Image 1: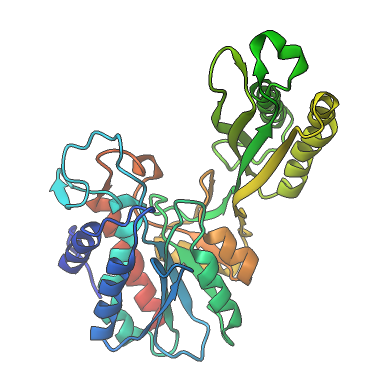
Image 2: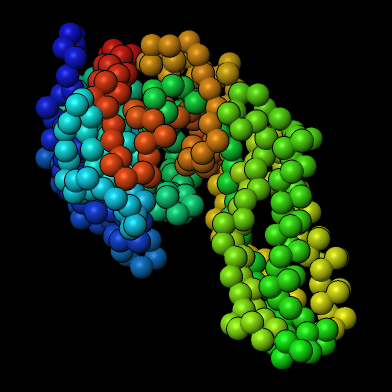
Length: 391
């Protein structure tokens, strides 16, 4: 396919407009969108496998174009988007708007633009993927901690033949991303004892012990920032620790019985996440809880993991990196701080994986989210080169 124009394919724009029209905010279902994709693929004679969540309200989709008895290349993306609540949009977030060389709408950048391009190339994939198959893997609930893709991974693990490599099309400005940080998030429940505030020394103040816990988290963040480990390829070169939510107490004259905290850390690939959480738990068990239980034996701290996504750490000399660099038409590679499903494909399925997709992460999750036509056109050129390799 010889492309000389600077515009995206009409099919890409039409499909993206359709995808944006489905409100797949993570707390809603994505089944209508998946039904549309399933029907679209079926019109080309391609069967899809839907892998639902336990409630049957959401689904992953997996489809193979070409021979099913060979590994091939997997193109992966998530169908859910972040909420628009509280954001000041200048247009309808779920209606595609083109203006000044940009396409606006929730998910245009993160990451329905990539999915639209994958689908628009289905007819060409059918013609070219006669010896090397293309696998499409679209997931749910990535934005809430890469939750949905786990069920897809379970299915892929049981298949006799897995993809030889994976390209996750998260917005990277079409840079080849070989690494990203892992992410773990936790909920903490601090349980103390209520009492009249005049009797505070006889009670266990859950908010105050929660504050001590948060201060310890901050001390870890400061230590990692000053002592490392470091990886200079990241814009934030060290592991980060962050407290996002803290609440507790009912009235000023009541010693609070409960305090709830939500925190996360995003660790470098060479920084052991298990060791980090073990240090945090040791502080709670060995320092804070003995003080609390000395006043009230029932007092304590409960730490529960909410989400966990491993980091991506693909070697620069791996075949998938050279292959995707050739498709992207560039020789450089980078690493990013945000998490994706790529680390799960790498660690859980041992599939060599990189991230490369249209749009800038700086535009994701914001009001008036957009992807530029230039970025989509670069991604289409990427797919053109992929077709040449398949042929």
